[in-house]
Length: 282
Image 1 (cartoon, rainbow, N blue to C red):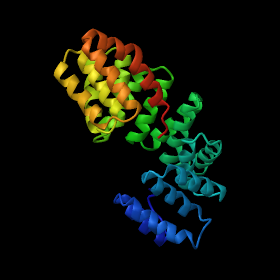
Image 2: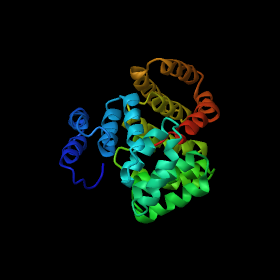
Image 3: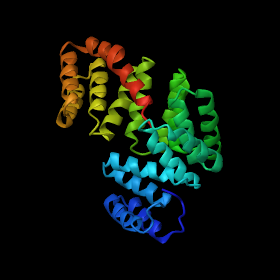
């Protein structure tokens, strides 16, 4: 959310968002949008609220309308640009680049553009932006996490692990960062540290069935059978659709013993999940 907003309607809406009342925030913004239908700030923050409510398609259209209104506020450009990037929208790059230029002293605009560039494979440009963001806010956990992602995409797992470690230290309950860190440690063949991070991350993200399975396999590889089956059951409780097949596959691996669980984790599941999660946009 922006640090300061002069518009009283936006102030009210954003305060509701800060409280987690996304429905209330959306209602306020929808009502005001009837009078100011092309206001990019209203469209942007309504998109944020609707995305939080699970209305991804509707939110995407709000963000597109926001960018079509040609906002000049770098925070709005960065927020909307990052949102449409999740849909591989070609407008994302120009919006994020403009945000970085117009808001060059704002850490948010620099790291969001850097995160985008990293996932596009433009790593030199990505590090330029992420390094600038880190210079502006050295202890921002989001910046640390995205630098970790960029280092991992560049193949530097040592630096990736260091950045992710600092990120999770700075954020209480950062399950996503812990799972990423665990995957990096597994990739480095450090199963003790990998299992610890995966287990902690999975407990922070009970809805993340994949994380429960990763933790289960890592614990099984360490011959912690009871803990491994506990994590598998945590995943089974939440599993739907394709997740059920993953649970079934993991269970069959556990039944084959620690070495098979280790082999499946190291050779099959962890590398594919790491690639997928590194490419997940913030």
